[in-house]
Image (cartoon, rainbow, N blue to C red; front, side, top):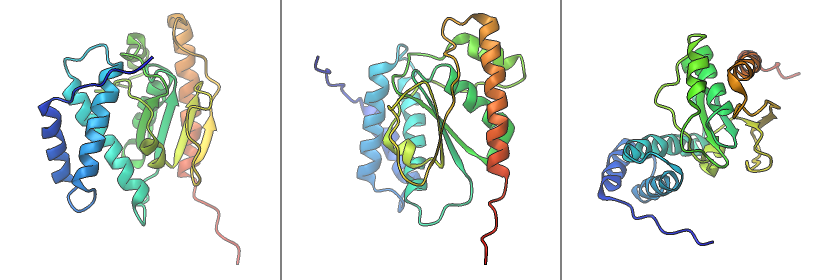
Length: 215
């Protein structure tokens, strides 16, 4: 089945102009425009609610451009980056991303994506996170792209199989966590608690200094 082309509106050009100014001298304007256009088309094909599609496009494109800059930087600034990937980016990966942001703050760059993103985050995800004082702020399901993987130091997958490209120089982990869809509130709380425990372990590993090289 062929995919119908998605027309890019003028507001997307304005988004690209703003991001081109932000990344002037770092990312070429043609690359910025291509990333913004592609981000709009990817979200337009998967989003159920399109009212805020330009704002989501700006957010998603900015994340992708930041990942491109990290991947191409000759020297990293020392801040590790973590990408969580599940199938729909509506449950497990959103839970993990929110928990990591709450635990690590600015110590870690946090990203999430889905191999087949849903139209929205599972509403109960925000509710069970709120129960432990962790917010889900301005998040939405977004598709997995190669540039997000290239910009990550750690890639954590949950149930998405071989959809995530394997690139050298990244640390990959596959967390066997149940799918929260249809799990009920008690099941979702159990999944939340398991993810919190796993993220706490991840943070401890990131903070642990690398062993000194032998002389």
